[in-house]
Length: 150
Image 1 (cartoon, one colour):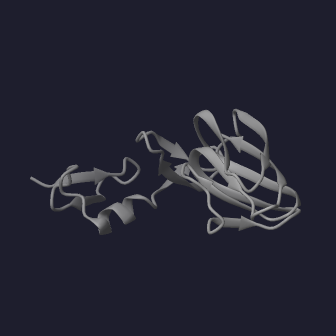
Image 2: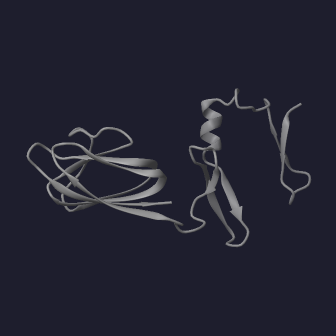
Image 3: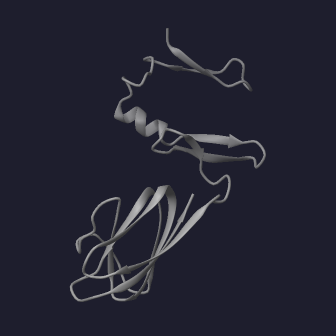
């Protein structure tokens, strides 16, 4: 018997999920479709994007501001440095206060082939990680400020 999704506002409208979907049968196409679901916010009268974190917790994007944050200052040199937080954060601002370019990586070792943040520039991203790794080219240094939000 196929699964059914029924909208309570439209008692005669339902959508069949055929074939029956369980964790073993979710294909890549279905996964991509499910990863772009929207939820109606009755209070604000608008659609909001749904997403899941790595623990499988369903979250709605854009509903509320960050509830916690962590700030870090990292001294980067030609030897890799890293800072690891106690848990994953999902929004990040990374600022390179110079005087040289810095290369960064997330939850993995940074090399001079990693993503480059030019001097006096910042990077803002939505990515779930808890460890920031930084490195500069040989003989160079930089000061990196990292603001992590969730």
